[in-house]
Length: 123
Image 1: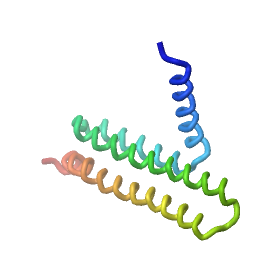
Image 2: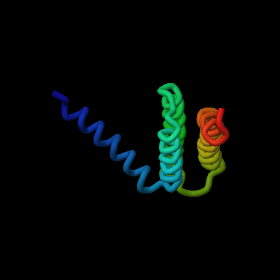
Image 3: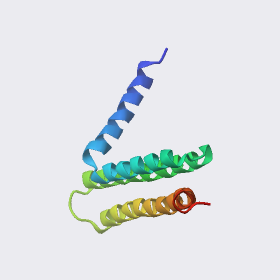
Image 4: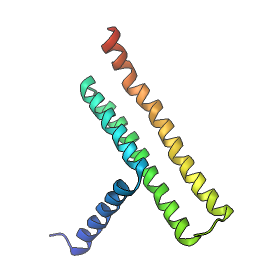
């Protein structure tokens, strides 16, 4: 039997996912792109290893986006006015998301590119 604390922990975690989905436009954009990648992967019949790489990559981007949301929210709470260090925190976390997204595009090209090439041009 699960303790109430574990159930509450899951409820809070799902609440965080729900918050990110409903308040963060970029989270919705990343999830929409991920849905397209998943559909493409299904169409291409990817191997389990390819799915694992894509799952990790998608997760990497989504976790980065959520940590960026946390950092921005925390900075806004602690420093509601402009502060140069607050800007650094927001810029660096946004840069981390951008880097994760760029890496995900590279991984996507490496994983999806060869089977797409073979599908359209033959072996």
